[in-house]
Image (tube, rainbow, N blue to C red; front, side, top):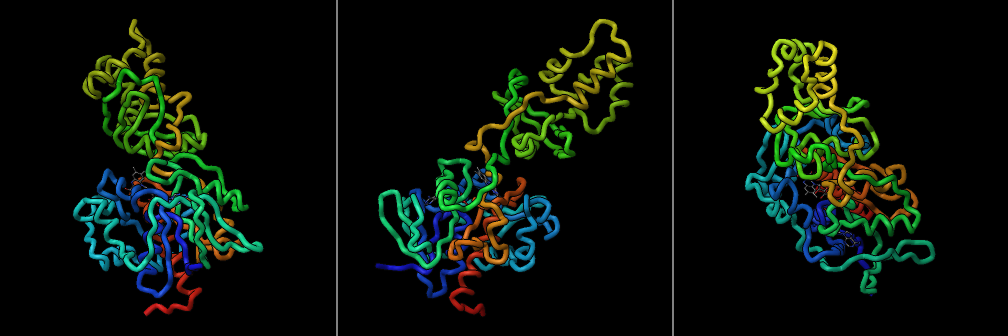
Length: 386
Ligand SMILES: Cc1cc2nc3c(=O)[nH]c(=O)nc-3n(C[C@H](O)[C@H](O)[C@H](O)COP(=O)(O)OP(=O)(O)OC[C@H]3O[C@@H](n4cnc5c(N)ncnc54)[C@H](O)[C@@H]3O)c2cc1C
């Protein structure tokens, strides 16, 4: 019976990183990928352009990544720019986001060198095998068994299940006593039926905020079921966490007093400020018949500066870009990404309770945790870096 030094469950971003980092060692590594191809979600990233990194400093990364402290030493230890340079993938920067210069996510997938690693596609892991209390291998859906000295779970989150990351390993880990924190969608659009008639419209420079001081500014997109665009998607995880009420400020550059003064003198002041459809929609709340100061101020506060999105919800997790929550970091060593009780079980990527904002942070989680696991495996086998 063949025994691998490492079995990687999942040929996505973090799994590819581990495989690449072990490709030039003599270790026997096997990737088991449940779907027909590797890197499916990676191919979808950044609208096919793949926002591969952010240019943030270590201290900024710690804030942008939820539980980002877990990766504190990785930010300093690993140079992801150098990694992609060595893999002949030139990057280009747009604001703080880095993309492959070719703007093709496919080139990111192809940059990983995994030719010495055995890859089995359409091979979905259905359980972990334990013998005498020790993790020894995995069993696939078809009943095939693979044995390994170490297992790395790189099975991704629960969102976009059609990409292969369907949460099946969450269930399996849980069954074997691995603790998971609550799972909820992050980077997800919002469901809000009240604006349905505005579907297809975009407003620029809007601010969305909540009572817990979360706030994002940017373009607001009205869809047939709710709100989308970067600011809605960024706010999604806080709505999912129940941090309500959530508000919109449609004119963040003007103060309440400024808007009030202008409107008091000219009731049609907002006509130039908004696209026609939105103006017509919002003016249905304007107190038309000889409004007094109090009524106008109330309109400005409640409908322009602090529009409450009552009963707002997110789309379900399958429509989210990323999954928040996952394997509890209390159970995993930040130095090795090794489970503290099952010492030959390693966990990397989105299945961990780590996620980031829009901007390349989620892939950085996958890259860093993949690098940590690969180095831990090398150390375990006494492989010394040159
Ligand atoms: C549309 C979209 C756009 C995105 N854009 C960006 C972006 O531009 N920048 C960014 O930083 N992040 C982006 N993300 C998030 C990012 O893609 C993920 O966070 C990242 O790919 C997670 O890496 P991973 O290795 O943990 O999981 P994945 O890349 O999802 O890989 C997990 C793999 O495991 C396999 N698998 C799952 N269960 C099993 C099983 N039981 N047996 C065998 N195999 C299994 C899956 O088939 C999959 O191939 C985007 C996500 C989506 C959905």
